[in-house]
Image 1 (spheres, one colour):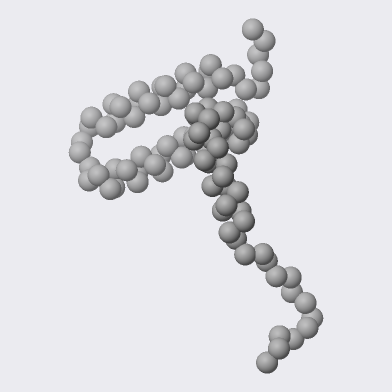
Image 2: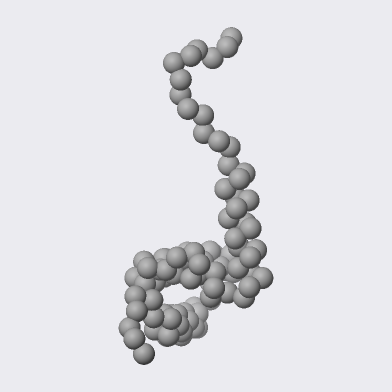
Amino acid sequence: MKQTTYDFRQFQEELAALDRKNDTRSKEKPVPKEEAAQTRLLQAKAEFMALRDRYGLTVAHVIAFFPEEEGITYLQKLILDKEAKPARRSRSSKQPPP
């Protein structure tokens, strides 16, 4: 098998290693649910971003990793978020009407 910049098997192995590491951390001490969820989310985001940067993953790679329905839902959310933002106004030399 030829080595590419995106090695999916190695990526999956690293994700599995992170899961195992997180399992051992969760057994250490109990933390309030809300705080624990927020901490896990922040940690997961940081770890994922590091993997994404390391392997040069694109949105297509990430979406392909999830089931088709979830990928489509995610893309629709990205499109809606982009459309929901108001257009930026350019500054002009005209004075606003009184």
